[in-house]
View 1: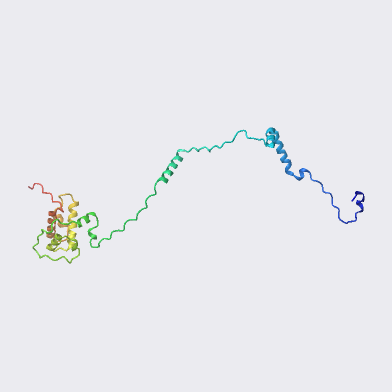
View 2: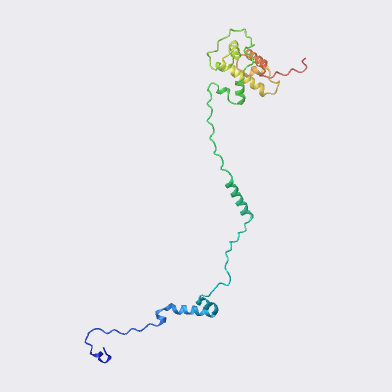
Length: 228
């Protein structure tokens, strides 16, 4: 519509007010800051700025990769590293084996196997098959049915039968006399000392002491001073 006839418009549409065009600063508020930054860079180094804009920029020297410097370790750090390396190189310790189950002892032989010496005395056997003990006060008895008789040698069973001793009594006398003869100083254990150790007839103890001395189970007594 020509401008001369604009007053003849018949439409009832509301006229809009023309909008004010925004300036460059209003439309792009960061433009000024960016422009100032470019300007500052250019003023500092115009040649570098121009090379960057034209794409002809090259680094002044090639950047080479350099391995990081090895840190300097102190004496403590070196010792700790060596200890750690030593531990890692060692084989693992062997597994601890469980202790063997205790050996079941015979209740009958337990009193005569309490220690190493008691077990050694219990297993002592005479080197002869006969017994030289003499006893005329009573007739021999049969001990084959008494407890612990199966643990005695033939000569020991004969000694018990002649002296009318039970196998347990004989084993007690054997433990007491042989232990005393081995633990006391050589030559100091005599017959009267043996009679005080055993709670049986002193004459029977004397016969057993003499027999054990012949077998070599008890060291011989030292001779008296002045005797020939």
